Image 1 (tube, rainbow, N blue to C red):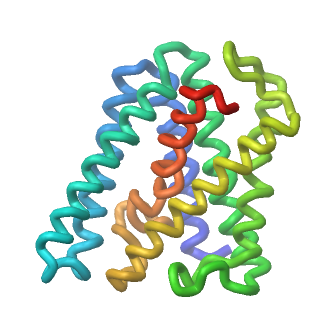
Image 2 (image 1 turned 180 degrees about the vertical axis):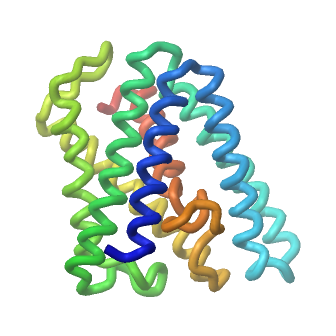
Length: 224
């Protein structure tokens, strides 16, 4: 087991425990936690894009504005998905678990199998095998949550819920690719160094921030 993987494993475990505690604690603590996470991620986003856009002031300001507006959208989506009750928090954890499963599957399949690159010009490390692994592992939370019941959502292992997991995994991967594109554009490996084994906070939540608004829209329009 490599030193980087050990750091990644420990960091992931601590993040998961912290997240569960803040999500289930109460709405105020949850919002405070999400606000801090998004604020720091926004700082990383601003620093990340400085190298490429520093001589293009208008575009750089536009990038900052888009990042700020999108952070607000994610905050609103997270707030509404979390709701106010324990059941709401449980559902929110389920969504995050799918994102985590997708990320873990992509990491392991990409490392173990490797093979043909997914979109080499965007992200040289992403492989087709990793993408397949992301889809497969995104279904695991549904297996684990299968016995639970939620007031407007059931965790039954059926085609509809499997499709939801795959859909969430797709947007997690899209988010990962978008941030990878900007990292490649700015010629940096990570958005920061705050998380051992992961890099920056934005590196860790890139899939989540692209997923939450989509899931919230699906909930509003009762798509799933």
